[in-house]
Length: 343
Image (cartoon, rainbow, N blue to C red; front, side, top):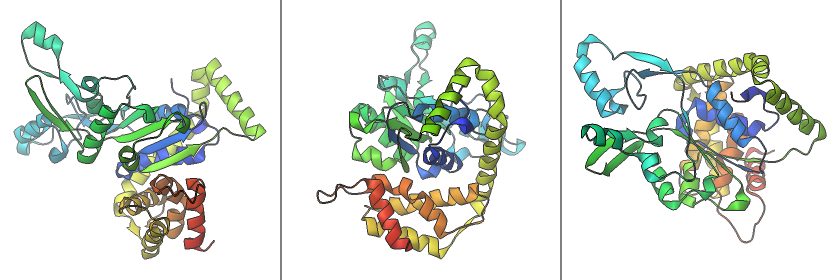
């Protein structure tokens, strides 16, 4: 049983980043760097129980969404053609997948491979889906992501860019959708992340060990209560988790009809220019995150304040390193926010 999401003490930026990514998957996922024992893995696993259930086609190994044949696997595309005017394929509600990618995983385990059991027992060539298939429409979590082997990083970069996993091996030629929210965590003291993979994360969060006495006491109190009686503790927080779940569902419905003010667009662009971010991914992520935040707050329009709030998590990992300025990325972003927003 996972620890309740709403019971996590402090770490508000980390929780908000995960919620925003759950509202809008196009933000690009979350990178969480910080000290050990600060609730990184706990928050991500708690997210699985928090998310609203999703509708998937019955029998699909990838959990394809009904009514969207263009974004479906070959099996569901054929099924859609066979159904034709008779209606959509049968569907059911399933939990949003949150899949762990262990550091020691082989490439076959990640991308999928020949199903040896069926090949040996029946002489059939069949595809055994990997972790990328299981994570489709959900979350792929990598703990210690900065220690991930280079060949797996290359695979993730290809799939993240295309939204599709292509497997060509052992006489198999398979392609299937693999669109997921990438969530990584790690300790920066143990190694840096490759720039190409770092750029693929939409939001970046730094978590630190609480220094406030009362906060630390509350963390210990809640964790001890959960370990002693997980069910009773989860029951006590179920209502608050349900409230967050309802707000996420409402935000997902609202986000498609929202508008973005000219002032918000201008501030996002000015901020990225001031920080010297490469390309336009910074502005796009900034606006998407601000829109998700506004939707979560029940607003209809994205304003400057929404941009200001999400700017640190959207931009701190996109800054160029300067040998003349060794200040922390967060401080540089906050300094730029003060200059652009005049505060």
